[in-house]
Image 1 (tube, rainbow, N blue to C red):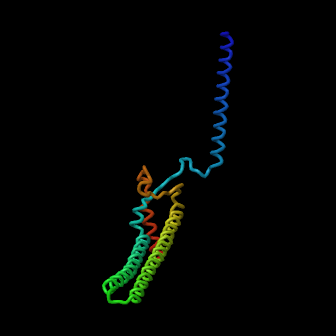
Image 2: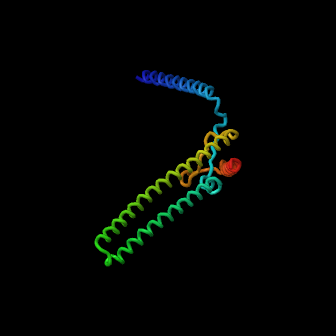
Image 3: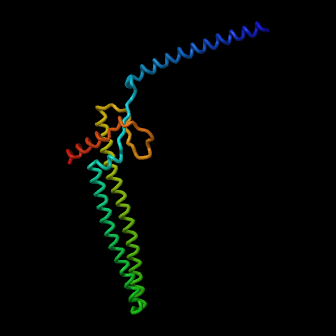
Length: 196
């Protein structure tokens, strides 16, 4: 019985040794094959960089101009809507103040006028909000496209595999050695001045 167990253990040890040998020989063959087929990746790995999105937003001249233009348009629309609201409010207050001196037909006519003004105000507000939203989206997409195009151009000489934007609360750790924000802002602003 002892001899049978000894023989089985010897066979198992030989089998495990063979499996380990086969496994590591095949793995080395796979590593050699994979490394030969992907020669574009440098031996030291790939490089990753990031830029601070809030700094870019505060320092990129085009983006500041776009935000200013959008805020000015929003204020202009707000003034127009405020004027319509004041007109509606004045008509309503006039009807309440002078309603006793008016006939039923005049009251009905003024109430209809107030309802029409209210409906026009709501429609105007909705149209303006949609227009503002569309213009904002279009202009911000244009800025985003310019940043992406610049990063492609910038990266031709740098060789980064990835360039991330660091949005607050999205990145948990970052080594400031890979922060390229200053380069990006400087380059984008120079490019914008040249095209302007």
